[in-house]
Length: 301
Image (cartoon, rainbow, N blue to C red; front, side, top):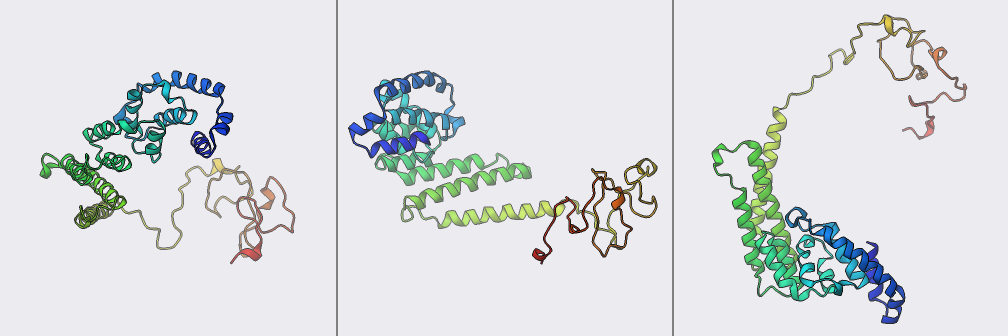
Protein backbone atom coordinates (compact mmCIF):
# COMPACT_ATOMS: atom_id res chain seq x y z
CA UNK A 1 0.00 0.00 0.00
CA UNK A 2 2.83 2.38 0.86
CA UNK A 3 4.57 1.63 -2.44
CA UNK A 4 1.32 2.28 -4.30
CA UNK A 5 0.90 5.62 -2.56
CA UNK A 6 4.51 6.55 -3.33
CA UNK A 7 3.99 5.63 -6.98
CA UNK A 8 0.94 7.90 -7.17
CA UNK A 9 2.92 10.71 -5.55
CA UNK A 10 5.76 10.35 -8.05
CA UNK A 11 3.42 10.54 -11.05
CA UNK A 12 2.29 13.96 -9.87
CA UNK A 13 5.84 15.31 -9.55
CA UNK A 14 8.15 16.61 -12.23
CA UNK A 15 11.33 14.71 -13.11
CA UNK A 16 13.56 16.84 -10.88
CA UNK A 17 11.34 16.50 -7.85
CA UNK A 18 10.88 12.77 -8.40
CA UNK A 19 14.64 12.25 -8.62
CA UNK A 20 15.01 13.97 -5.28
CA UNK A 21 12.58 11.50 -3.72
CA UNK A 22 13.93 8.37 -5.47
CA UNK A 23 17.67 8.92 -5.51
CA UNK A 24 20.14 6.64 -7.25
CA UNK A 25 21.16 5.23 -3.89
CA UNK A 26 17.55 4.31 -3.18
CA UNK A 27 17.25 2.63 -6.58
CA UNK A 28 20.35 0.56 -5.92
CA UNK A 29 18.89 -0.65 -2.64
CA UNK A 30 15.53 -1.44 -4.29
CA UNK A 31 17.27 -3.37 -7.06
CA UNK A 32 19.24 -5.41 -4.52
CA UNK A 33 16.03 -6.33 -2.70
CA UNK A 34 14.33 -7.29 -5.98
CA UNK A 35 17.23 -9.46 -7.11
CA UNK A 36 17.16 -11.34 -3.84
CA UNK A 37 13.39 -11.64 -3.97
CA UNK A 38 12.90 -12.79 -7.57
CA UNK A 39 14.20 -16.40 -7.22
CA UNK A 40 11.72 -17.00 -4.39
CA UNK A 41 8.83 -16.19 -6.74
CA UNK A 42 9.78 -19.04 -9.07
CA UNK A 43 8.27 -21.47 -6.59
CA UNK A 44 4.84 -19.80 -6.72
CA UNK A 45 2.08 -21.87 -8.30
CA UNK A 46 -0.03 -19.89 -10.77
CA UNK A 47 -3.08 -22.11 -10.26
CA UNK A 48 -2.78 -22.03 -6.47
CA UNK A 49 -2.55 -18.24 -6.42
CA UNK A 50 -5.80 -18.04 -8.41
CA UNK A 51 -4.83 -14.63 -9.77
CA UNK A 52 -4.63 -13.05 -6.35
CA UNK A 53 -1.01 -13.47 -5.21
CA UNK A 54 -0.09 -10.69 -2.82
CA UNK A 55 3.60 -11.59 -2.95
CA UNK A 56 3.83 -11.37 -6.74
CA UNK A 57 1.91 -8.10 -6.63
CA UNK A 58 4.27 -6.63 -4.01
CA UNK A 59 7.33 -7.63 -6.04
CA UNK A 60 5.98 -6.06 -9.24
CA UNK A 61 4.96 -2.94 -7.32
CA UNK A 62 8.50 -2.64 -5.96
CA UNK A 63 9.88 -2.65 -9.50
CA UNK A 64 7.33 -0.13 -10.75
CA UNK A 65 7.56 2.29 -7.82
CA UNK A 66 11.34 2.51 -7.75
CA UNK A 67 11.75 2.25 -11.52
CA UNK A 68 14.09 -0.75 -11.61
CA UNK A 69 12.04 -2.97 -13.96
CA UNK A 70 14.53 -2.45 -16.81
CA UNK A 71 17.01 -4.64 -14.94
CA UNK A 72 14.70 -7.65 -15.29
CA UNK A 73 13.59 -9.65 -18.33
CA UNK A 74 10.15 -8.62 -19.59
CA UNK A 75 9.27 -12.20 -20.50
CA UNK A 76 9.96 -13.30 -16.93
CA UNK A 77 7.91 -10.44 -15.52
CA UNK A 78 4.98 -11.17 -17.82
CA UNK A 79 4.83 -14.72 -16.42
CA UNK A 80 3.94 -13.22 -13.05
CA UNK A 81 0.92 -11.31 -14.37
CA UNK A 82 -1.49 -14.31 -14.35
CA UNK A 83 -0.74 -14.61 -10.63
CA UNK A 84 -2.14 -11.11 -10.05
CA UNK A 85 -4.79 -11.00 -12.77
CA UNK A 86 -7.68 -10.63 -10.31
CA UNK A 87 -6.23 -7.69 -8.42
CA UNK A 88 -7.70 -4.31 -9.33
CA UNK A 89 -4.27 -2.67 -9.76
CA UNK A 90 -3.05 -5.15 -12.37
CA UNK A 91 -3.74 -3.14 -15.53
CA UNK A 92 -2.07 0.04 -14.23
CA UNK A 93 0.80 -1.99 -12.87
CA UNK A 94 1.42 -3.62 -16.24
CA UNK A 95 1.50 -0.22 -17.94
CA UNK A 96 3.97 1.10 -15.37
CA UNK A 97 6.21 -1.89 -15.99
CA UNK A 98 6.05 -1.42 -19.76
CA UNK A 99 4.36 -4.78 -20.34
CA UNK A 100 1.51 -3.61 -22.58
CA UNK A 101 2.99 -5.38 -25.60
CA UNK A 102 3.09 -8.64 -23.65
CA UNK A 103 -0.55 -8.60 -22.62
CA UNK A 104 -1.83 -10.53 -25.62
CA UNK A 105 0.26 -13.50 -24.51
CA UNK A 106 -0.92 -13.05 -20.91
CA UNK A 107 -4.58 -13.13 -21.99
CA UNK A 108 -3.87 -16.26 -24.02
CA UNK A 109 -2.42 -17.96 -20.94
CA UNK A 110 -5.50 -17.02 -18.90
CA UNK A 111 -7.86 -18.40 -21.53
CA UNK A 112 -5.97 -21.69 -21.72
CA UNK A 113 -6.05 -21.90 -17.92
CA UNK A 114 -9.84 -21.67 -17.77
CA UNK A 115 -9.82 -18.15 -16.36
CA UNK A 116 -11.85 -16.44 -19.04
CA UNK A 117 -13.27 -13.82 -16.66
CA UNK A 118 -9.79 -12.43 -15.97
CA UNK A 119 -9.00 -12.68 -19.67
CA UNK A 120 -12.05 -10.57 -20.57
CA UNK A 121 -11.15 -7.89 -18.03
CA UNK A 122 -7.58 -7.56 -19.29
CA UNK A 123 -8.73 -7.72 -22.91
CA UNK A 124 -10.85 -4.62 -22.29
CA UNK A 125 -8.05 -2.89 -20.38
CA UNK A 126 -5.59 -3.30 -23.28
CA UNK A 127 -7.95 -3.06 -26.29
CA UNK A 128 -7.67 -6.72 -27.19
CA UNK A 129 -11.39 -7.45 -27.55
CA UNK A 130 -11.16 -7.89 -31.32
CA UNK A 131 -8.69 -10.71 -30.87
CA UNK A 132 -10.42 -12.13 -27.82
CA UNK A 133 -14.21 -11.97 -28.13
CA UNK A 134 -15.63 -11.25 -24.65
CA UNK A 135 -18.99 -12.95 -25.31
CA UNK A 136 -17.35 -16.07 -26.70
CA UNK A 137 -15.00 -16.23 -23.72
CA UNK A 138 -17.84 -15.86 -21.21
CA UNK A 139 -19.95 -18.52 -22.88
CA UNK A 140 -16.94 -20.82 -22.97
CA UNK A 141 -16.32 -20.20 -19.26
CA UNK A 142 -19.91 -20.97 -18.33
CA UNK A 143 -19.96 -24.08 -20.52
CA UNK A 144 -16.81 -25.41 -18.87
CA UNK A 145 -18.17 -24.61 -15.42
CA UNK A 146 -21.40 -26.50 -16.11
CA UNK A 147 -19.48 -29.40 -17.59
CA UNK A 148 -17.24 -29.59 -14.54
CA UNK A 149 -20.28 -29.26 -12.29
CA UNK A 150 -22.19 -32.13 -13.90
CA UNK A 151 -21.70 -35.43 -12.04
CA UNK A 152 -21.03 -38.52 -14.12
CA UNK A 153 -24.10 -40.28 -12.71
CA UNK A 154 -26.64 -37.70 -11.56
CA UNK A 155 -28.90 -40.33 -10.00
CA UNK A 156 -26.11 -41.66 -7.80
CA UNK A 157 -24.78 -38.29 -6.62
CA UNK A 158 -24.91 -37.82 -2.86
CA UNK A 159 -26.61 -34.70 -1.46
CA UNK A 160 -23.23 -33.26 -0.44
CA UNK A 161 -21.77 -33.76 -3.92
CA UNK A 162 -24.87 -32.31 -5.57
CA UNK A 163 -24.69 -29.25 -3.32
CA UNK A 164 -21.07 -28.67 -4.33
CA UNK A 165 -22.01 -29.08 -7.99
CA UNK A 166 -24.81 -26.52 -7.73
CA UNK A 167 -22.59 -24.13 -5.76
CA UNK A 168 -19.91 -24.18 -8.46
CA UNK A 169 -22.43 -23.44 -11.19
CA UNK A 170 -24.01 -20.70 -9.09
CA UNK A 171 -20.63 -19.05 -8.52
CA UNK A 172 -19.81 -19.19 -12.24
CA UNK A 173 -23.19 -17.71 -13.20
CA UNK A 174 -22.79 -14.77 -10.81
CA UNK A 175 -19.26 -14.09 -12.08
CA UNK A 176 -20.45 -14.05 -15.69
CA UNK A 177 -23.41 -11.77 -14.91
CA UNK A 178 -21.14 -9.35 -13.08
CA UNK A 179 -18.69 -9.27 -15.99
CA UNK A 180 -21.51 -8.69 -18.49
CA UNK A 181 -22.87 -5.77 -16.47
CA UNK A 182 -19.44 -4.20 -15.88
CA UNK A 183 -18.61 -4.17 -19.58
CA UNK A 184 -22.19 -3.42 -20.73
CA UNK A 185 -22.58 -6.55 -22.83
CA UNK A 186 -26.28 -7.07 -22.16
CA UNK A 187 -27.27 -6.59 -25.80
CA UNK A 188 -24.77 -9.18 -26.99
CA UNK A 189 -25.28 -11.55 -24.08
CA UNK A 190 -28.71 -11.18 -22.36
CA UNK A 191 -28.58 -11.86 -18.65
CA UNK A 192 -32.24 -12.81 -18.13
CA UNK A 193 -31.75 -16.55 -18.75
CA UNK A 194 -28.70 -16.51 -16.50
CA UNK A 195 -30.56 -14.74 -13.71
CA UNK A 196 -33.44 -17.21 -13.95
CA UNK A 197 -30.98 -20.05 -13.54
CA UNK A 198 -29.46 -18.28 -10.52
CA UNK A 199 -32.91 -18.00 -8.93
CA UNK A 200 -33.57 -21.66 -9.62
CA UNK A 201 -30.29 -22.78 -8.03
CA UNK A 202 -30.71 -20.50 -5.02
CA UNK A 203 -34.23 -21.80 -4.45
CA UNK A 204 -32.99 -25.39 -4.60
CA UNK A 205 -30.23 -24.47 -2.16
CA UNK A 206 -32.69 -22.88 0.26
CA UNK A 207 -35.07 -25.86 0.01
CA UNK A 208 -32.28 -28.32 0.81
CA UNK A 209 -31.18 -26.22 3.75
CA UNK A 210 -34.75 -26.13 5.05
CA UNK A 211 -35.05 -29.92 4.78
CA UNK A 212 -31.72 -30.37 6.53
CA UNK A 213 -32.74 -28.07 9.37
CA UNK A 214 -36.05 -29.90 9.78
CA UNK A 215 -34.25 -33.22 10.02
CA UNK A 216 -32.05 -32.08 12.90
CA UNK A 217 -33.14 -33.19 16.39
CA UNK A 218 -35.07 -30.43 18.14
CA UNK A 219 -33.82 -29.19 21.54
CA UNK A 220 -35.82 -30.31 24.58
CA UNK A 221 -38.35 -27.86 25.94
CA UNK A 222 -38.22 -26.61 29.55
CA UNK A 223 -40.41 -28.28 32.12
CA UNK A 224 -44.03 -27.23 32.34
CA UNK A 225 -43.63 -25.89 35.90
CA UNK A 226 -41.30 -23.19 34.56
CA UNK A 227 -38.36 -24.25 36.68
CA UNK A 228 -36.32 -25.23 33.67
CA UNK A 229 -33.36 -27.54 33.95
CA UNK A 230 -31.70 -27.92 37.34
CA UNK A 231 -28.27 -29.54 37.50
CA UNK A 232 -28.29 -32.74 39.45
CA UNK A 233 -25.87 -32.55 42.34
CA UNK A 234 -24.76 -35.87 43.78
CA UNK A 235 -22.18 -34.72 46.28
CA UNK A 236 -23.67 -31.82 48.19
CA UNK A 237 -21.59 -32.47 51.27
CA UNK A 238 -18.39 -31.90 49.39
CA UNK A 239 -19.63 -28.49 48.28
CA UNK A 240 -20.62 -27.13 51.67
CA UNK A 241 -17.46 -25.10 51.94
CA UNK A 242 -18.32 -23.26 48.74
CA UNK A 243 -21.18 -21.32 50.32
CA UNK A 244 -20.73 -21.99 54.02
CA UNK A 245 -23.78 -20.04 55.22
CA UNK A 246 -26.35 -21.42 52.79
CA UNK A 247 -28.53 -24.22 54.08
CA UNK A 248 -28.05 -27.45 52.17
CA UNK A 249 -31.70 -28.14 51.34
CA UNK A 250 -33.04 -24.63 50.91
CA UNK A 251 -31.54 -23.57 47.55
CA UNK A 252 -30.41 -25.46 44.44
CA UNK A 253 -26.71 -26.20 44.56
CA UNK A 254 -25.10 -24.32 41.62
CA UNK A 255 -21.36 -24.27 41.16
CA UNK A 256 -19.79 -20.86 40.48
CA UNK A 257 -16.25 -19.87 39.69
CA UNK A 258 -15.95 -17.39 42.57
CA UNK A 259 -16.31 -17.89 46.31
CA UNK A 260 -18.41 -14.82 46.97
CA UNK A 261 -22.05 -13.88 46.47
CA UNK A 262 -23.54 -10.59 45.29
CA UNK A 263 -26.61 -9.02 46.87
CA UNK A 264 -29.82 -9.53 44.99
CA UNK A 265 -32.67 -7.07 44.36
CA UNK A 266 -34.68 -5.76 47.27
CA UNK A 267 -37.68 -7.86 46.36
CA UNK A 268 -35.65 -11.04 46.75
CA UNK A 269 -37.02 -12.90 49.76
CA UNK A 270 -33.90 -14.97 50.30
CA UNK A 271 -31.82 -14.34 53.44
CA UNK A 272 -28.91 -11.95 53.05
CA UNK A 273 -25.70 -13.69 52.01
CA UNK A 274 -23.36 -10.73 52.36
CA UNK A 275 -21.66 -12.34 55.29
CA UNK A 276 -19.81 -14.77 53.03
CA UNK A 277 -18.47 -12.14 50.59
CA UNK A 278 -14.73 -11.74 50.35
CA UNK A 279 -15.02 -7.95 50.38
CA UNK A 280 -17.49 -5.38 51.72
CA UNK A 281 -19.70 -3.01 49.76
CA UNK A 282 -20.76 0.34 51.12
CA UNK A 283 -24.51 0.73 51.78
CA UNK A 284 -24.75 3.53 49.23
CA UNK A 285 -23.71 1.25 46.38
CA UNK A 286 -26.49 -1.28 46.19
CA UNK A 287 -27.16 -1.48 42.45
CA UNK A 288 -24.69 -3.95 41.02
CA UNK A 289 -24.68 -6.44 38.20
CA UNK A 290 -23.27 -9.89 38.83
CA UNK A 291 -19.88 -8.76 37.57
CA UNK A 292 -19.54 -6.17 40.29
CA UNK A 293 -19.91 -3.04 38.10
CA UNK A 294 -22.33 -0.37 39.23
CA UNK A 295 -25.06 0.87 36.91
CA UNK A 296 -27.15 4.01 36.97
CA UNK A 297 -30.81 3.22 37.62
CA UNK A 298 -31.95 6.29 35.69
CA UNK A 299 -30.66 4.77 32.40
CA UNK A 300 -32.61 1.56 32.69
CA UNK A 301 -35.80 1.53 30.69
